[in-house]
Amino acid sequence: MIYQLTVIAKSEIRSKLALLFGNDCTLISKKPGFYRTLRWDAMFNIKTRFLPQLKTIRSHIKMRDLSDLDNSPEIEEEEDSSVLLSIGDLMSGLLMLFALLFITVQIQLSEKVKLLDQKILQVEKLRQELQQYQKAFEALPEIIVNTLEGKIGGKDIFTVDPITGDVSIRDRILFDNNSSVLKPEGKKFLQAFIPLYSQVIFANKELEDQIARVVVEGHTSSAGSEQRNLELSLRRALAVSNYMFSKEVNFPQKAKLQQKVLVSGRGELDGDRTRDVAVDRKVVFRFQFRRENLNANVDLNRPLPSKN
Image (cartoon, rainbow, N blue to C red):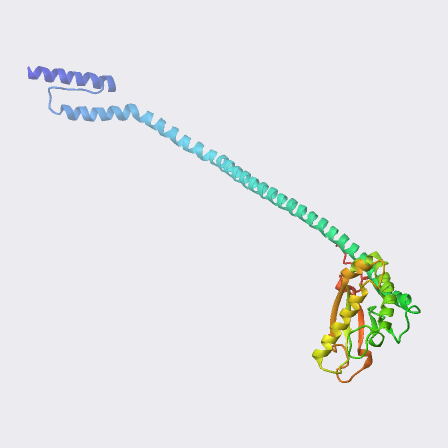
């Protein structure tokens, strides 16, 4: 029984190998070396039947490799072109960025130029106004002299500073020695002087606007103590100011002038501190301007710098 199964199994193996390798593979089931014969015949059959196919497959593989080598330059060209496109896109982006920055800077510069033009126009307008004011102020002392002289006395009573227009009134017409009470002659002088002086101030609207204060200053000589002279000068300035706005003095610009008047006592500070000089005893009417540089030597005719 076992022998028959073995023969049947070997016959099936032989038929399977015959289908695979043909009838060249000889199987002798009952002889020793059966499997060795099967092994060598199978290897011979594989070598003779499949070797040409293996060679064909190998040749196809080699051709495939060669075709890949032939196509490698094209691949490299495609890679190079993609790299160039990426660089081109980057350069285009940078160019657009710089263009936007340039446009932004140009817009900002144009706005700055407009602001500069406006400032130049403002400065030019201000310079023209200052020129007009300067002309008015330069003519002010002469106007005051022409208004006062011949109407209220001469230089023995008052003097006008040719540069500032300050009016200095000698104390002898206003007060007795060491006194702060106005004399009748002093009152009469003020009744004539104040309306004319206020007329000079308020006749010119530009001049009126630029005069911030009309300072009434009392001055003394160096005779006596410094503290006493300071108090005396202040009392004399107050006496003049109070009389100016009393009922005894009438003029159209009285209310306007009262808003501008400032009283000050200088004592002997502006006089000769070494000796007693009569001309140091006085009451001074002085202007204070809103624009301090109008009293300075400013060259208003100097051209403005160019916008370029």
